Image (cartoon, rainbow, N blue to C red):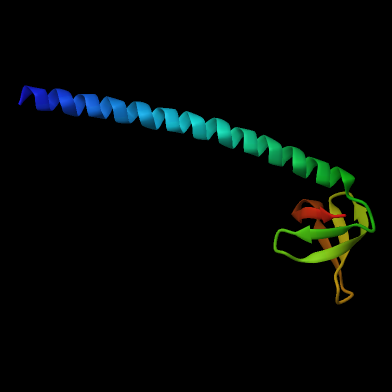
Length: 94
């Protein structure tokens, strides 16, 4: 019976160490991806100019008509002009 308690304790310690290592790997991997995405979106929002084809997070495509601070006027295929936040733009099609 004494060996059983020692085995359970050793298994528990090994499991805690494994979970801690996995947590650290996930943390650093996520931090790198967040930094990469942040740089990508910062670049997109500074390069935004009239005439560019853009895609929104919801999958809507349109053409930039004008940029006024944080508001962007987008013309969609139907001819409608949408006022949207520049931060809703996910991708610039070149």
